[in-house]
Image (cartoon, rainbow, N blue to C red; front, side, top):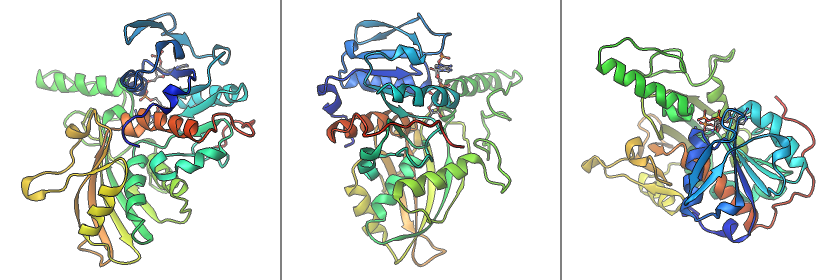
Length: 358
Ligand SMILES: NC(=O)c1ccc[n+]([C@@H]2O[C@H](COP(=O)([O-])OP(=O)(O)OC[C@H]3O[C@@H](n4cnc5c(N)ncnc54)[C@H](OP(=O)(O)O)[C@@H]3O)[C@@H](O)[C@H]2O)c1
């Protein structure tokens, strides 16, 4: 599962990448090039600002089209990694035209008629799609992989998680802001904060997305709701604290899991090592553990610091790092397409006719 295979490449389908100039879109193009996706079966799209510009792809110069509903003629599947507003406007419209939409935004994730999929965890959910499949938030994906692996031992009782999220999770503009602030601070110049409410260089922001009435942020609610939907555990108690850190790429998470019965670190390591897409990196004596700097540019979810939770007899504590642009976004989207093609469900039985529900 973790290595890209060529199911979709062989199927001869034509795909569109919407948001090709963005942080996720660029990684998606790299992954498609790695798997030798033919340029003749690839359409690249972004906003009107980018329309007409050219991008290089495997020796071909592809012209960027404006992502409009009438631009998808001949396209079988579209990856949308643009903005939530773009997804809301475009996805139902092109799904009605018969294009399978694999959507990166938060627009449809919790809609009951839209599968929310991490193929290693709930790949079977793709069969009931109605033209749109969502990928989870980039913090949810590695978490559900770990929980699915460990949940094979005994039921999960409760999860608490603190995230350490890279700025590329916000998009290309946030990476430029971190770089600019770092250079400005090093040169003794004043810092400008535009993407985040505060300086992010040499700082940590205990806020990802806006605050809701209960004191949690929208990102923290997303983690809880999406995890429950993907794991088919609608009542799983989960509390998250989402934090932005001055790292370019790869999110990390400190996770505490309470089980029905004690799960030893040895048992947990074996379950995690067996799970597709997870790599255990856990030799504390050698200071060998996952770090964003190591995870960036790689496919697996890296897990380490696996230990008994000293505050609970049936608890386990661990640490993970995962490239938010690859498994957290573009790679997961491509794997969903493979899953759909492999299961022969590119075309849905019925098509979503409504827009997203709030
Ligand atoms: N970054 C992550 O780790 C991550 C993970 C999971 C999901 N996502 C989701 O993926 C999506 C893209 O995120 P990103 O980080 O790649 O953002 P980004 O770097 O800001 O890129 C945004 C992309 O959207 C395009 N775009 C903006 N307005 C558009 C319009 N009206 N029509 C068509 N295209 C338009 C931009 O094209 P122009 O260059 O022409 O403006 C650009 O290609 C978001 O929905 C985000 O929530 C991101």
